[in-house]
Image (cartoon, rainbow, N blue to C red):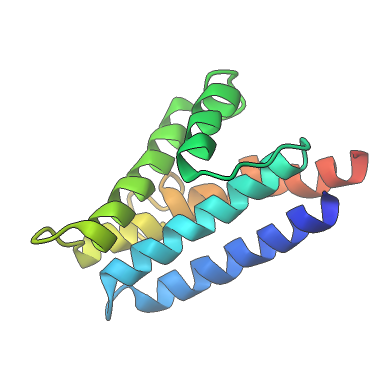
Length: 139
């Protein structure tokens, strides 16, 4: 599981880098990549607990039940995860709705007022990334 978590962390980092590059040229693709950055980061965290999920909705439920509700994550961080999910759904399936560059920046954590709170930066924050090496070393 440690090796799988390490690879998921790498995938998350690459997805977030790609998202940041796409913000101005393709906001919908940027939020999709930001979502997958979050998805892979959270998958890595759960993998270190010996858990895996086959459905995105089950992973989302586990985020709220096992991370937010227990206090390991703040309620705000759980909302940030939901925001990225919502923006990705709009970008991928929104019909006439679209993702603005501003929202893509929010999803990637690039907004000045939200840089520590929203998706990309949140999922690279100490809360997530610091837990990976320490837990990996213990399991």
